[in-house]
Structures are given as C-alpha cells and as structure tokens.
Image 1 (cartoon, rainbow, N blue to C red):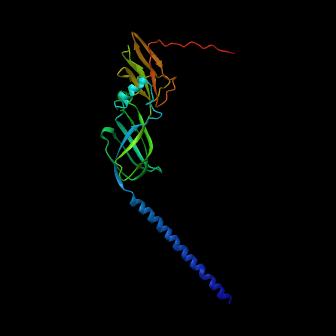
Image 2 (image 1 turned 90 degrees about the horizontal axis):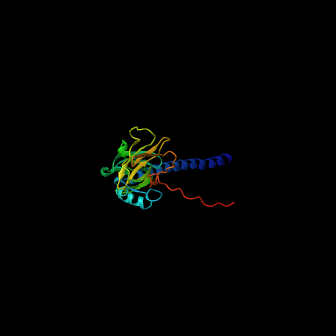
Image 3 (image 1 turned 90 degrees about the vertical axis):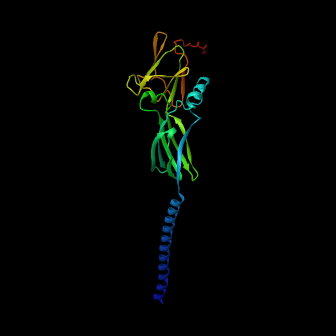
Length: 252
C-alpha cells in the first residue's frame, strides 16, 4: 500500500515539470513573435529636416530697435547660417544616422518609423567673415517619424548672443574675442542697415570692441559683461555721452 501511494504522488510531479517546460517554451516563442512583429511594423520613410526658430526665451523678444533688425535680417533668413550637421539616435542612445549639408539643398534621409533623439548645430563657415556674421543655432529634441511623415520640423535655439551698435557717425567697428588678431576670432564688425552687429558665443579676458567716433578711436573691454546666449544687447550711445542719473535721497 505504501509503494502505491508513493507512485501516485510521483505522477503529478512529473506532469507539473512537463507543463512548466511547455509554458517556458511558449513564453519564449511569444517574445520572439513580438520582436518580429515590431520589426514588421517599422517601415522606412523618406523625410526632410527643416527648422523653425523658438520664440520663448530667445532673441525674438525685444524692443523697437531689435524688432526691426529681427524682422529684416534674422526672421527673413539673411543672417541665419546655411550649413548644418545633425545626428539621429534611438531613444536608448544607439546612433542610426549622422549627416550634414545646407538648408537650401538638404537631401531627404531614409529612417524607420519610430521615435528618435536629434542633436546638431547650424552655423557659418570656418572664417570669421561668415562664422560671426551669422547666428549660431543648436538642436536637441525628440521627434517621431510616422508612415506619412515627409518633413520633420526641428526647433532651433540660439547658441550665441547678439551685440548691436548704433552706426551713426561711426565709419568702422573692430572686435576680438580674446585680444588677438588671430583669424577666426576677430575682425571687422559687419554693418546691417543702421547698425553694426556681432553674433558671438563669448569673450575671453582681453576681448574688446573698438570703433571710431570723429577722429578718435574708442574701445570697450567686453570680458566684464555677463552676456547670455539667446539675448541681444544694444549699445545705443557710443559717443562718450552717457548720462549718470542723480542719486536718490537716503534715510536712516
């Protein structure tokens, strides 16, 4: 009787192990099926990348002087860079594409549908005549490519600040980011309409701006200013006629 009882107990244990193996094999096959279906669901799409300027927290907030300059020279694209470079990665960090070109001749790229992380920049050429005469833009955002996607619109942010100078009675401006005349970080400040301007990313300790007024050359050391990227700074009076406001009465 005892041997029969032991045999009867062993049978369900064997069946249990058998069913467990079947469950494990089924789960493994299900996972593989999900992965295959996900790959089948992803389709390759030909898309073109373009951009629009961010409004909030950028140089688009300004007074009358800057409003006019922005509409005529930035929003119109006249002082925006033509060259760009972009890197496309999956959301888990795997790079899938990296390319560069010019915005007016940017070629479509083929990407699978899904969500991606896009980083990159857009700026002028290697020489100061182009590099500092155009705004420097950067990109860093997530995008989603769908089956019907044809154009992906990126949001550009400024990676520079803008210095504006009243051009009245001044025939030239010169500047240097670090106090030297090395090509690429210094040169003539360009003129647009009634203003001289510089798009810059920073000044070192000896950085300066020089200009003439009448027969005298003047200069400002720029290293002491805390310039913030995405902001503009208008120097409206560079004739040495700044007025010092009166002190206010104090109380004890």
